[in-house]
Image 1 (tube, rainbow, N blue to C red):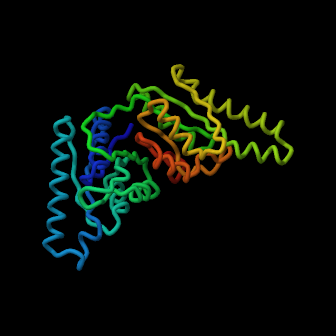
Image 2 (image 1 turned 180 degrees about the horizontal axis):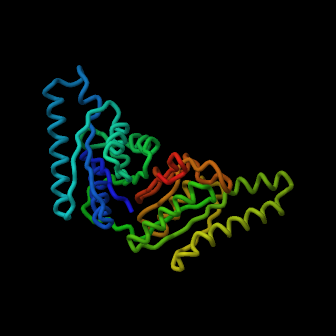
Image 3 (image 1 turned 30 degrees about the horizontal axis):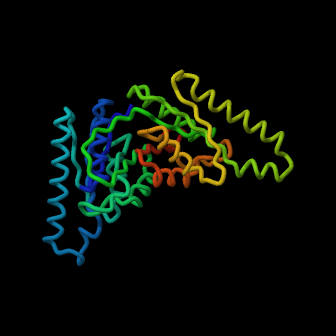
Length: 296
């Protein structure tokens, strides 16, 4: 499925967890691995640090990469390592992914401590917007050595092309990992209230609900054991509903599209995806449409 996975490491809890998840996934999928550590601009540009300080930062980064390369070897994986110096970590991570022809990026989010403070939430979000390939965001605020297995995978759908691409990606992943698929449709109550105000509520609501039911039926027709979930957003934000459902159902991974600005009521806007990454306590795989119409 994913032939070559880029794993960004920074020594923080989130970065460590991302490395664990990325190597575990690579082992399950038989993927090649590239480990990258990006030295932030503050650690390479004078006069903020002396030359000695910059060399120490490079040495720490190299040590971190070597440690995780050894960890990959213990799992029977060969991992290449890349140390990159760039002003913006997100750009550096994405650049290495492109140079190495990786088709998945794995990185931590909200990692506000650790070596060089590289993988801040904002860095992860920026990388996910810049990357031409799927980005798997792994959240962790405490150290843990427990293995991660994606046993329950949730995909929110809205009928947009990106939503369909995310669903296809989730189905492939579920097939490879033997996980359970959960398909979620969130009814945006605000839209129905608008239709009601326009005095078109009964007819338009029926059309809308029929389309939504068809979406769910089509989404799970190839997976008899899949769980179909329907939720009404009400006064809640859609991203919050998605995160809450994931928590209730014990989901390990959410797969969703970003910038899904077309389709049924434009449910999966990029802002929704970003809110899910902030709210969800599980990993989030973000997919977007590449040039030419293929999934990225």
